[in-house]
Length: 203
Image (cartoon, rainbow, N blue to C red; front, side, top):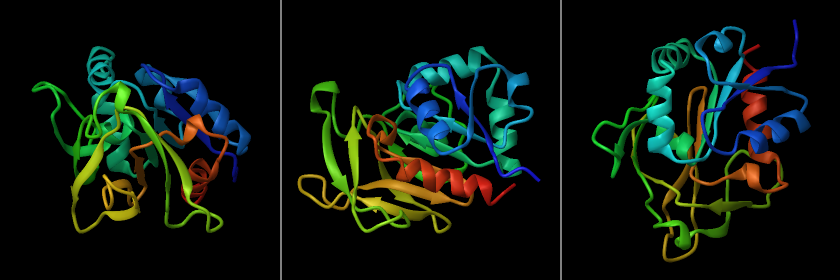
């Protein structure tokens, strides 16, 4: 039985290349996917950062939502960063009225919660479950935050500094993982390693 996971990166829009590089460095097979037939042999999926409304529209155009929702329901591990967090939320605030999500994580996410592009920032984020005790360096670009979570959701990270102290920025529910920030934009691979370990546990 192979322990080399095949992990798709949803290649509709966003940081596809950066996620693929991070996964390859962790000995996973990273594959860009944008068509229904390309999902057949995937062990897991990453939904990258980008623009969530654009990503949602393109997923509708490509007919991907039924397949995405079915694979999530079957237990396929999925990691979403920034826009990917929005895509995995059961409910979003401040989205377009017609904006669809894959869902799967029992959370309410506020889109663009930290402000516009020029309000982007970086912060050290304590993150439960990562190797070592050092916080992860989070890059927040038009990022969402999690307003609330259901009983089945594990909160992995909250911001610790004002003005956003205690805001939830990383969660896990079963085989689904989501972060507000972009670990693919830093050299620290611990969040991706956490996800790859989640994937390997299902092989």
